[in-house]
Amino acid sequence: MQDRPLSGQVALVTGAGTGIGHATALALAELGATVALHYFQNASGAQAGVEQIRAEGGCAEMFAADLTDPTAATGLVDRVVAEFGRLDMLVNNAGNPLQRTPLEQCPLEVWRAAFDINVTSAFLVTQRAIPHLRKTRGRIVNNLSLSVQTGGAGGAGPYAAAKGALQVFTRTLSRELAPDVRVNAVMPGVIETRHHEVFSTPERMADYRRQTPLGRNGQAHEAAAAIAFLCGPGSSFMTGSLLDISGGRFLR
Ligand SMILES: NC(=O)c1ccc[n+]([C@@H]2O[C@H](COP(=O)([O-])OP(=O)(O)OC[C@H]3O[C@@H](n4cnc5c(N)ncnc54)[C@H](OP(=O)(O)O)[C@@H]3O)[C@@H](O)[C@H]2O)c1
Image 1 (cartoon, rainbow, N blue to C red):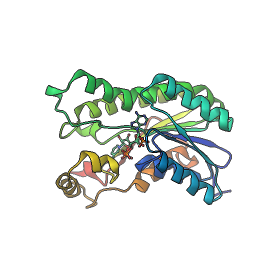
Image 2 (cartoon, rainbow, N blue to C red):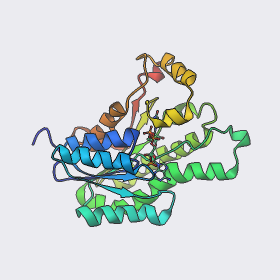
Image 3 (tube, rainbow, N blue to C red):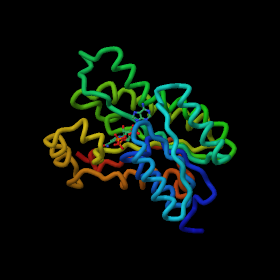
Image 4 (cartoon, rainbow, N blue to C red):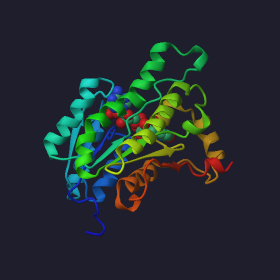
């Protein structure tokens, strides 16, 4: 059992049809967790994750929800607990820059939408999950962004502001839920996922590589490994912390 420390435990990962969330679902399943893979539009990605986990002898199910809809967000937690009977880990991973807009020109609806998907969704899911997580001495991991330290580059201001709010949410919640539930966050640098296929040009990606002391951008499994660590027993004395997964971007 030493290599499957999460056996008998249930994890909900939001945005698990793609990218970092998908890799996190697989990483938690490898550690023995039963995984609820949440998705919004990418059913095929979530389905592939469920099939892979089951093929490797694990247990997984997929759940659709638009997390900008409060009823759907809270209903997601209810459905997962109804299916699996408990909840031990919540990974608030779903998030989206939506569009690049300098703050000076940012329409109110874009600002509000950035907060809806990047922080209010996590608030709604987390609030509903807390009673279940208290019972299991659970863990929450929130997925932030390098931009909480640097500010949003190239028109990512609304996204960065929302992720900054998620950082303070993490810290506050870690105080409020201690000692029952540990609450931590990761701060990925540039991870090569659909996020950048949509929002970054090849030139911008090359620039990011040049700015990174490790000389490359990250992969989804590398961010997932840090999230899995914060879910697992190896991080048992950590709460309220922020793990930097940026290839050393802050060394420059
Ligand atoms: N890649 C990076 O360099 C990087 C760096 C720092 C932080 N992050 C953060 O990492 C997280 C995952 O991003 P990623 O890089 O893996 O990119 P991604 O593949 O684009 O993932 C975004 C996820 O958010 C979900 N999502 C979007 N709108 C939603 C909505 N209305 N309701 C529910 N879910 C919704 C998507 O679900 P569907 O696909 O099913 O629609 C998708 O799974 C995000 O929070 C992002 O901000 C990424």
